[in-house]
Length: 267
Image 1 (tube, rainbow, N blue to C red):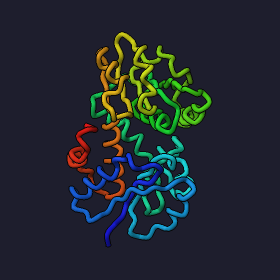
Image 2 (cartoon, helix red, strand yellow; image 1 turned 30 degrees about the vertical axis):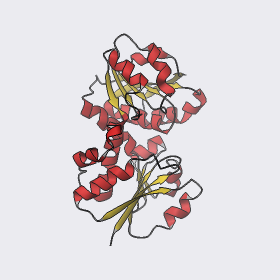
Image 3 (cartoon, rainbow, N blue to C red; image 1 turned 180 degrees about the horizontal axis):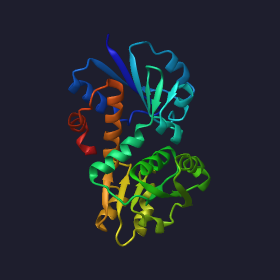
């Protein structure tokens, strides 16, 4: 029986998940099909309950990362603390948030190291910001500063920090003094963080910008020109997809094959 998997969300036309997962299946010799399916929050319950036994798992993108939790029978630690999931395994309807793995792995592979209890700053306050809080905790952070355009939207990220047991505070989005942290993760859409490029510290530390097209972003380019270390969101994307492949197939992800499949405009 041919096995099925898919990325679901709306819109999904921009998603590189089909490219990455299909490359993985080919490299692993699996006769699996990976779909890209437009599904909104209203359609999600009927979609999930209608899947037959050929379905292995789902990659979940916006706006479904919170809605998918309501359909889960088993929730991983990362999905619990971030109240967000980007992966559902159909066997037992288990959900996970591999965005946390993606952020952590991308930084570790790039060589990020810091003293236990280091300070981190996150630009943004949405679902990816919550994943960044969890990833910083796993990397050893003791304190996190959240830069939010609307401080009221930071409440879920603060709740994530409280569940984990990490100190967190909310500041204005352009409060650039907090860019002097050991690690900064920008989780906002393309162009939004451009204003931060004008207020960089003299010696910036590490920056992971989840945006990967265009690359480098204005913030990343300015950061590097000031002597800081930068990590592209493409590395996070690749790492979280690797973890999804491992969860769905039970095999080590073929990282080289997955990276090679990415369009050259994104590398």
